[in-house]
Length: 304
Image: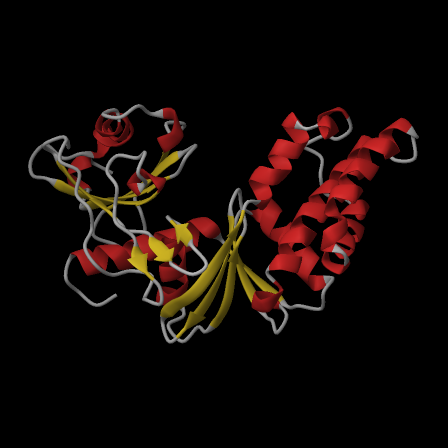
């Protein structure tokens, strides 16, 4: 497609990656782009140059193209801080934040995140995925789990995010694998096999024993009663099970809709299946794009 076919550009800008989709006059993108210049790798003032490096070939010769961004780009350490909207509220709404230091060929708009006062919590990026879910299924009511580095559990009712809760499960697993004594006993890249389900169950039934079970993994290495693969699987089960124990109020009445990368979503689905909970897994990219399209309609002043 020629650059002059570009009508607007959708951007999902996280801590580690920058992804963009170029849209013409139709619903589906005409190009998909990706770079490693995530928010966490950029210094202040470097955001405009980073996005231009990615989208420049798709910018037309004349006019200004709307670039609609979601994710950590709107965090305090991002391009410009986009204020939070307080739940309960629809996932999209309010004003988009506009950075001032933009290339003259683009108008950048950043989707605001959501916040919760009691208990204190925030999200950026997930609100757009929830908006995508509701755009595709306006009558949806129930629980959405968005697993990842910082997993989210959200209660949705009447088109609004009613409450949500965040767990540092993915980050905790990474820290244990790379910076704790367990780094000598597990393999971070090999974490899902038969020991996973048992680890989930043990943490759900006895979350207070989590610290004890962690050291038992190290001891099992010394006593040669398990393999590194089995210990990794059990560790992943223990940390996800600990999350499930804390988030029981969200999932115990089921079912749960999961929006996340294939591998981690499959693990969460298996973990909840072991608790008798039915799950549905949605593709995160498709859901994000549906949310960004909904945000673009809002930006253009039409109904989401």
